[in-house]
Length: 141
Ligand code: FES
Image 1 (cartoon, rainbow, N blue to C red):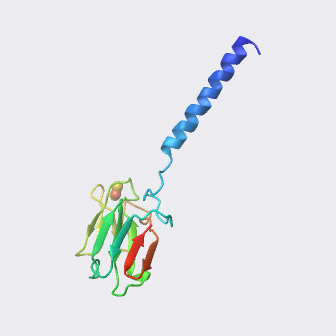
Image 2 (image 1 turned 45 degrees about the vertical axis):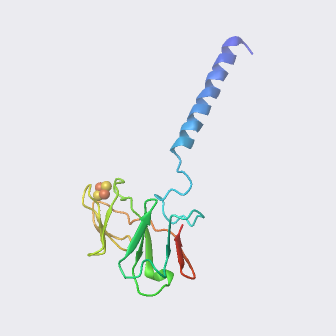
């Protein structure tokens, strides 16, 4: 291999390393809530149903995810776990417990407690997360 060929090969190899490094930097970290429906093992929200989330409409949030009681039993179907990231352009949405709706402060999109779009410009629903109940312990992952 001549010197020029060697230098060209070295340059191409360093470009590949740089591109793969950028791709890794742009990928989602584990446990990131933005995608929803993760079904992962990272607990994003947890609560003790003997003392928390007692009333319909009550909620708890962490890690960019909100858990809302939507019904009166302790079945999984009586809870909703949603991303708090607006599907329009990524602003953090606000939950109004009184109306049981979400409103985005950036461009006014609105969502219901199941994540469905009530008003645009957002076109996609809020991503949902997996809810597990064991005894009085509820977790979102
Ligand atoms: S980012 Fe939420 S409506 Fe635009």
